[in-house]
Amino acid sequence: MSANTYSFTCIGSDAAALAQLHALLKAAMQAPGCALHEPLECIFQYWDGPVVMSASLLGTTLRCTVDTSAHDPLEKPQIQAWHAAGADYLRVHVFNSQVGESSTTYYHAGKRIPAKAFPKPVLSEGERLYELVLEAKDSALAKEVKAGASPNATADGVPIMVLALRAGLVKSVRALHDAKVDWSACLPWAAEVADLIGACGGNQREAMLSGLLHASGADLPKLSRLERVVRPVSTHAKLLQWLLAQPGVDVNALLVDDHSGQETGSLLFHSVEFFEDRADVLKVLTTSGARSVPPAQMSDVERLTRMCRGYRDAQTPAQLAAAGVDLETPLWREYPALRMVMRNYTGALVDLRLANDLLDAGAGVDYWKNPEAFQEEVVEPLLTVYWYEPSNASGKLASRLDANACQIVIDTLRRVLDRGVSAAMEVSLQVDDLETRHEGESPPSACYAGSLLGAVAGLLCVRGSMLRPLCLPLVTLLLENGADPHAPCRRGIHLWARGRIWGWGNWPELHDPWPEGMSVLAYLQQRQAEMPDAIDAAVIEAVQARS
Image (tube, rainbow, N blue to C red; front, side):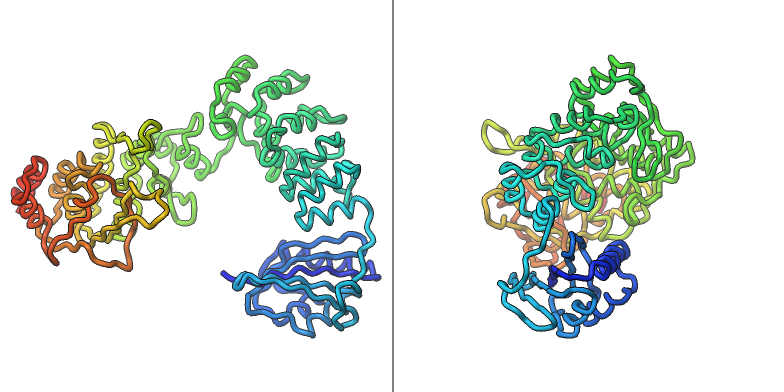
């Protein structure tokens, strides 16, 4: 959605008024959509749903950023309200995302002034550096530090290193580290700092984490229990080994979420999500006597999420159901575990095995009785070509759709149909040619509307398709569950409402249209008369047996 992003810079002589305005802006940030208090109500009075994105107060300089509609101009009464609230001088920078244009205007006592008349803020070194942070001037801040600015400067009592990490200023963080920043000053924010180092520390990540842990005054037994500290440290085997060897550090202690204060399980319990079960880290933990210790309490959402993501010691669907966990518990929006597994499926057969286990454990499928949901969450994931990967030797796609994979696909659809989902469901598809997807142009497409049986036998699994091995078993399964072989189908048409799916193989065959309203049986018989094919002969025989 297009928007106006306003950046206000206020310089005033009334420190108390600016502090009050800053507090109100901060409150508006924390409670978006709530009623605004004066003077903010006057400042934003002509705008529809403004959102305060940031606010800072450095000395006598107040800055804030506000998002509002692209059609919301700044009116003169709003400028006067800024002045009345304590802004002697006001700089307004606005960026309109609808047209991609920006402008900057300056005001004093309600009147526009030239840029050169706008005073420079009087700032301490820390505030001057923080100004660069607020303006996201990564290179400029790094240059200041390299030129001799103190790496231990603070703004509003917060070290500039913490502020640079929060802003994701990678060059500045590296420069501050190289300038021998005093990590002990960052200890009050240790969990946040370690987490941010893990995200933007680059190739100096381990050295920065080591500096934090070795800082004077670091309480290592306490830090070793903070999840946001241990998670990035655990990706560095040597540093983890050193930490676990320190007095008072317990490798089996339950980690703590510093936001909620809740215990979340031991380090080994989190091995998959923290360090992907890397062998070198597991060796350190094994040598240290690590055990996988779950937290005393876990919600149904947490237990189901661990199951879906394949985390260590995750319970199976049958175990969770036996323990009284409701398999229909929404994990995101209204989607329970089964729907999440299928919506996120990208070809890993372990996910289909989990889907089958969920179905066997009683997970519901009523939502798939809706044709749109059935197509999006069952047909498209199962029959999009995800079973292929680029070959380093030829650059072509090499098939991984073996007999085992075919059987799992068939078993998944069989379980869904056995639970009452109709095999006669209609689908509306646009099939794109996977082979041309990297050529920088829109791939050729084939559109289809009609029965799922027709989509399988006459489009997705036709001669030359990578999904050809699925053709006869899928057709047989659909016929066994009541699919109509005489239902009319349409190909080569333009569809507004359709799902997109990747196809691969003999593209002329995939794209071959058939006469308007022809059934899949009639189409296959026509193609068989033109050019016989053994699989199509078996498909035709199966269809005729059900006719």
